View: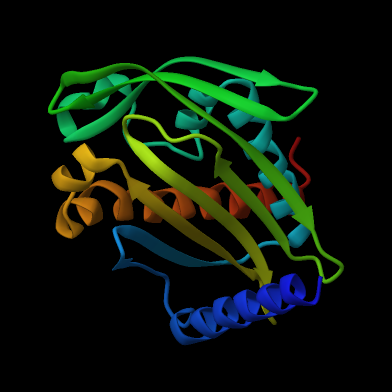
Length: 221
């Protein structure tokens, strides 16, 4: 128990140190070590924690219920099936299911490179867990349970961190690709494929959160 608690303290300390080092400006960057890509993204948001909580709940609900809905707001402009020609690599979603008893989601998709299918019926299973802390901060962790043709292991955490004015949306994504894609996806290609999407996601979340607060303040239904 003591070891686990110590590891948590170390992780939080490192995260906060990284936040304070880079949070002066919105930014996204990636570190690569031992075949693992670790990407951090930060964006400042001028809104309330209550509004952020509601937006995060909608993010989780759409992700679990119908991920295609996310392309109308949280993932807007970040690459969906009909936009495959614009992107080197894309997941073409075919089916999404959720086990409401266990909270485990199952995504069935094809993997496309340069508009050509290179792998069919890839199954991605995982879960998404939201935690709300006493200080108003939030974190949502997404974990992939099993390796597949595309991914050896992956997990990501989305944080809402209170500041003196507003708060930060912070994203950390850890990805290790399986052998084929590990050869195909260089650090430069990863940045071209992934980093801009994380930046876009954070900016979309910021825009939606600030938009909702503006509507609330104006009393518009």
